[in-house]
Length: 494
Image (cartoon, rainbow, N blue to C red; front, side):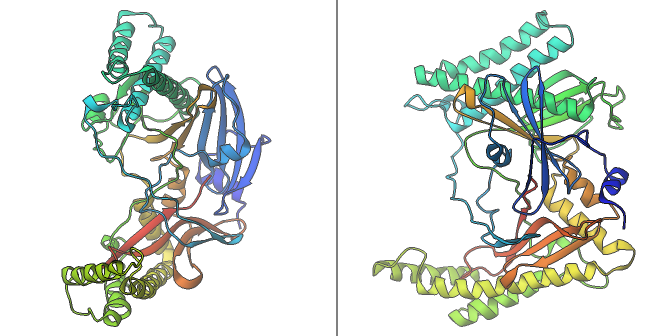
């Protein structure tokens, strides 16, 4: 069997950290081995996370010279991905160490969209929307400063005009009619966030495009249509690409996009500026996955299997078999009202508890169908089925974008605590594993059948490397749902 190190070098681009002693080494809760390396440049310090099982950089954390250096534990937990309450699976996750308990996080209140005139509330606090916009503008401002410095145009009329336009927009929020002294402090914090995000982006460009690469253009790309305008039609992404800020890079060590005749590259960055926890999320498909993994030798029957299981384990025991979802919903509402009328706990009516027990059996049944189908695909000749599994995972875990994009999260309420995190998104090293025609995938059942774990086989040790967890989920409450879909969660890669 080939040496894993040689396999990575043959199939995937090797990192620049080979042979260096890492600052920190740890395993994620899903068994991925990560080496952390520290570096410094004119913007401050950076921690680079290299996932040894994926063969690439999965995260960089940046902090300014005057900021407190994060502890090893803080570095591990820093992430650029925001959680979605619907993405979290209340399951035990399988790793090479065994079964590890994973708890779902508390639900996060979803804020309603606000008008531009409502950027500061009556108490003088920035709204969440305003905080994000300020971070985007401040990032744009600091990237512009860098752009003009490296291109020798700092202080030029063009430089002054660009910065004045951004500063004027920042001032509109800072001088809002509801603004107080505290508001201006909050605005300044977001400006610091932008500076940190810009430093992380500059570092990311250097890492990806080489030491001779320089940023020659910067754009604010948060609205529909901004990306094709900024890239002059080279990239025509819709808002599937959620980049808020984009840069044009000259002097890259990489081959340019075929449509870009002048040889430059475009990179997009999606910005998050908050104090929330974060992790990778995934797309949740319908039960049949749109026929994505159907094969002439076997069709995925998860939809019909799931519906039949709901009928058998939920609707028949409840006496609601043959009724429509609307009829079942009315029966559920009545059962809830009667339960709460006598002091019963909300969402704990006997009907719901009975439905939930039956729902677990239905979920297990649909999970088993996916498990058996993927196992079948893995037996097909010439790696045909493995390629299909790779396409499935790519569809669910990777964004469908043309312009490369990364995610950037900035956190910290005080200047000395601010740090930015940059994580690859469209060019995540995972993508190379998924699209490599030689990758051998494997699938495991969770104890109890509550989830299916999909991974690949390590080419040296033969160990199972966890990539994603799939679990069937009713489209709504099991008492009334007639169909189920999938909840998908990517493994912890850092």
